[in-house]
Length: 251
Image 1 (cartoon, one colour):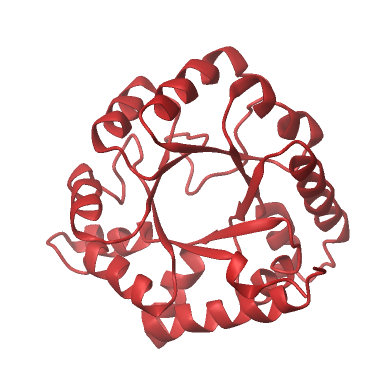
Image 2: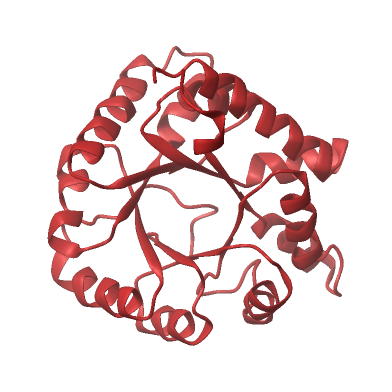
């Protein structure tokens, strides 16, 4: 069986900041949430600094980097502004994501295949600065093949379509097969494979059974559950679900 320790949990704390910003002030604090998440079993913290700063703010990124003893994964659009912030902050990792001002959440994967010339130098600058880069992309062969021309060592597969199908009461088999096939292709190409978007306890447990996926990044569901049940208990329950799934993965 696969070792449960080889599947990392990254916790996205964006929506702690959403709650704070709804009223203003300093509470609840993303930094404290990150510290609790790490104590409960996360191994990294993700934060998305959006162009409109709707949740995470620049000072949050600075304090997360300074005050949290954990790898920081900065989700960012592929823009000159965000590149400058990443080069100044030097997070452990940067995940390049698509971004539209009008969207409620990230609606799909980055079109890496269609932006090779734009992404290659940006990825190069981040890599030169010692930042581990991943691309948040759909489970499609064209997108999985694109990193070979761009240069990042990692990808994160967008699991939203599958999670939405499952949540709607469908079997989601077609979307599941796309994820499995995309993971196999990425592994053959030598890419480190992460996954995220829309995952809950049940879907995280199932996707943990794909041995070639080494990291799950989960946010909105965990923060929503934490409002009702507490952040520590919620993250420990997620870690347990991932471990159950991982134990079923082929070695």
